Each structure stands twice: as C-alpha cells, then as structure tokens.
Length: 125
Image 1 (cartoon, rainbow, N blue to C red):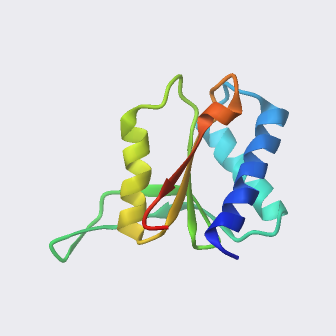
Image 2: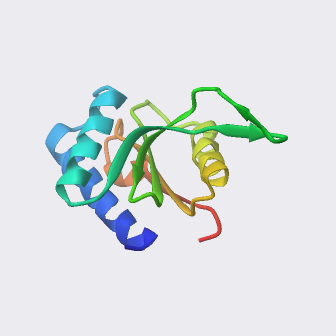
C-alpha cells in the first residue's frame, strides 16, 4: 500500500472519529481512537513510537515519540488545541526528515470544522 492510499484511510478515520466524538477532548483520547479505527480498517499501526535523534553520529536519548506510525510509512501527529502553531507543522516535517519517511498527517481535533484541522506534510513525495 502506498502513502496516498494510507492517507486516504487515515482521513476516513479522522472523519469517523470526529463525527462520533466531536471536538474538545484530550489528545490522548483521539490518539487511542485513531489507533483503534486504523487497526479496525486492517492497517498496521504503532503508537508512541520512539524517535531517536542522531547528532554528529551520537544518538541522543531525548524521548521524542511519534503519536502513530501507520504501515511503517505514514506519521500521524494528533493535536487537540485551540489553534495549531507553526511549530506543530514544523514538528511533523522534522519527524519526516529524522525518519526518512515521505508523508505525515497533522490533525487538530479541536476545531469546529474538521476539514480545517487536517494537514498533509510531505518529505520528497
């Protein structure tokens, strides 16, 4: 399955969860719901995946974690904040560079229209 196919299923899961739960819950609720929904769709999903940072050949143990890694190809970063900041977008792009993956989805569930809360981030896709 290619990144775009996975992204399509991720978007479907986002809509399903938003329609069922709405806005305003904690991020951890949405991460758990996303994991459940994506697994239910038959996708391989890993949650809270450790992300090592290598600086000048030294592995730094800093505790960065990907919210979700889908099919070993797509990062899903989940937020539930009043407004996404530029740093949230940069975070996903940096995660893509550090993992050498091509696609990330940033979603903010704390919006009145979920279409305004979904962002695709690419790294040479």
